[in-house]
Image (cartoon, rainbow, N blue to C red; front, side, top):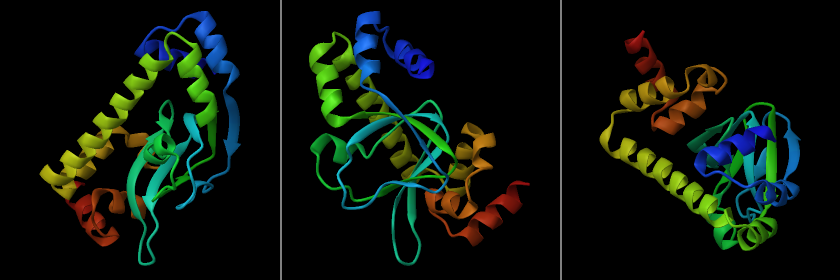
Length: 188
């Protein structure tokens, strides 16, 4: 739980009383590798902090899943659109490794916003962070080649990417596994 406190303090210092209230709402939940955290059509009920592990966001397709996000240790994960609107998700979330999450329910988070002085500030800054990550992803798809997207992803998380199957990386950068193989050969 210290990881979350440090993460939040980095965003905006949190008082001990606000931390005590917020942390009382958190639940530590371990998950096995390849566990589905949220299925398409289900409503996201949790905002989760990844204490350990790697998580993938994707759209399931018969021919091949479309991966559009990876989240790592010390990041928050949720189907944010579903979480905010409490409507069914159009995508799925799964663990790619053994994962430990600290989760807070939608209902409990609303209580944190209502009963703490810092909750709304942290919520706003987290929403801004998610927007910036989404915007960066969209811009990379529109302005970079697949090779540039791969190099960017690899430079950001070189050790962690070794744990992600290449078919998911290929999907994430928008190419087939065969095209990713050619990109990797050109680079090495």
